[in-house]
Image (tube, rainbow, N blue to C red; front, side):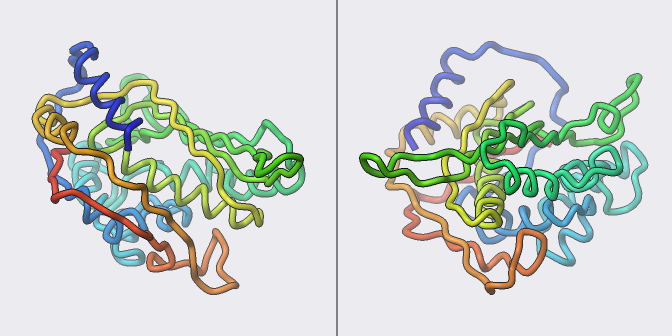
Length: 269
């Protein structure tokens, strides 16, 4: 994907060194194996409203968050397997009372041209107050904005599609950002399906993007690769399945996917 490679190159060559919280260690992820093991599972876990890494593994077969749950227990004393008020909580129980997902969908059905369909995945009170952290890993995606837009398909004829703009509070560009685009892109598709229209454009606003020092050599290697044709994604499953229940990870189909040789990318922890 040319746009993504350009972003990495611009960050690598024109970025400014910055010294924030120092990573305690690294993990490596297989950029090719993430689809079935992580990408198709994480949206269903988030949409369920769960904040439990234990539930993620037991109900959805997702083990991605186990390491961070262990860190959260060690650093913040959260219950075993718990992550605190992360994505699922903010989406389905914002401020302890609002199901933003349900309200968002009803708003888009009730007022198709609304510009108010904005979901906040960030509540400072749930993150850190007075220097006291409530979560160990704060949500990287802080906001979603959905819009039902009309696309011109031919002269005088338009098709309505669902656009989504997502705001990255922070983005690990080589590893985290592509993961987030895939996960939240599937959620965009599920919302569009709920509205009975196709998905449109996904736009990512990155407020603070990073390439960590231990990723630099891998990024240079990645930049040498020629982009391949884009794959497509479709959603299958029973007719009765909704965004709230009934879908399984196998319902998300990755079509015509082509890949270069396997690459492992370090991830800061």
